[in-house]
Image (cartoon, rainbow, N blue to C red; front, side, top):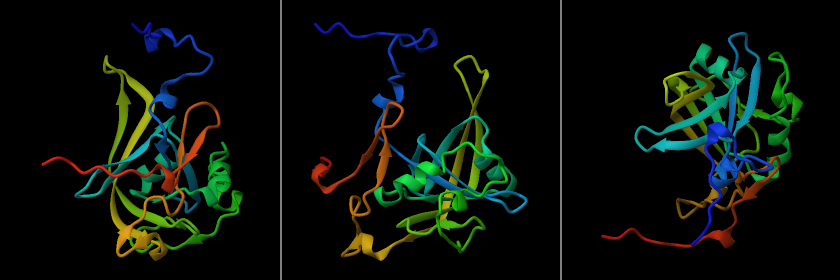
Length: 205
């Protein structure tokens, strides 16, 4: 019988590095562009991110600490999700730097920008997919006792979606073709989705 390593998170994990984000991994990256109320661009990656509904298409990301992106979205009600790929991994990483609110992360990372159609924040040039989003719910997360945490969950509806046609084959989006990257555990682990990881399995019934 396996002698599991057991711990209660409130008491600490007793390991060299917190295993939580290595276990629930790899995680897609919420590379989120926003615009402040004063018109300053912000671009930040979030590893607590995912698609959470089909119709309407809802995506969500959470920010540990109320960072500029959350403040901007609360002020304007808009943001853009940009697909992070291997080709832009280093630039994406550069946008994770902790800088002052007046710093434009597009310029910081040397990234070009594309105008959006339905929202004001720019899209990341070179990213093959963009979701233009409108805020639906900002939620400050709570613990099991109802106490507020220092984490904010942002849910947005994708009201406009841009797809590079090169990512389509016979009208079907090819998940691995843009070489999307995902966050792993530890201080520096990332993964790239490739064709060699593909397997097919149809639902029963």
